[in-house]
Image 1 (cartoon, helix red, strand yellow):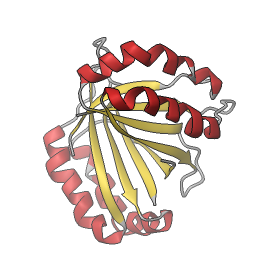
Image 2: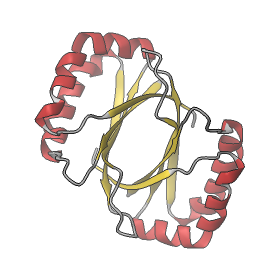
Image 3: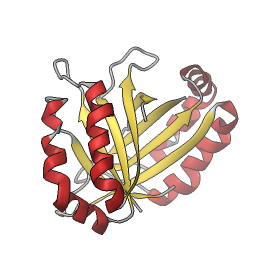
Image 4: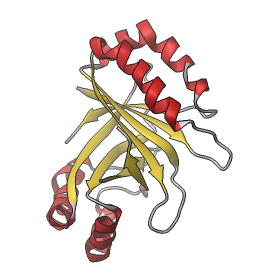
Length: 103
Length: 103
């Protein structure tokens, strides 16, 4: 199992449509990838901390895939469509990272 | 329930002792905070992607707390000790962020 983290930076002027992201983009991700090795996903929305400071990232999403190989095949099959949908809800580019799950 | 993300940047020269982090630091976190509202944690270790690119973060950890208020009390009671332990396993400062769990 691997975890892919997708971090959407928040800036003073960045836009992010959370409704579209949750109801349409993540639905698209599930439709395309749940039968290609996607085991589950977690979406976290950055909020101000106790000190009122703005979050670094608007959204942090973690996708769990059964293997790097499975993700490679899933990305080859549907990555262009899924990445192409990003412009429909934000004007920032996410930082993608691959991770092994330690605990 | 809230999620606190802790992101440790990776640079060309940064140091990170994963064994200490996993076996001692996270154990300290559990010992101090499991009875103060910590519901669970997930530790992810950044690895090179399919294209061989280095991860942005050495480690991404997510702590789930029952509420922002519970975290505030936990941080007040043990935050100094836990934050003070960071220098024992890395020379970088983590980026902390508070998140609401969307899905």
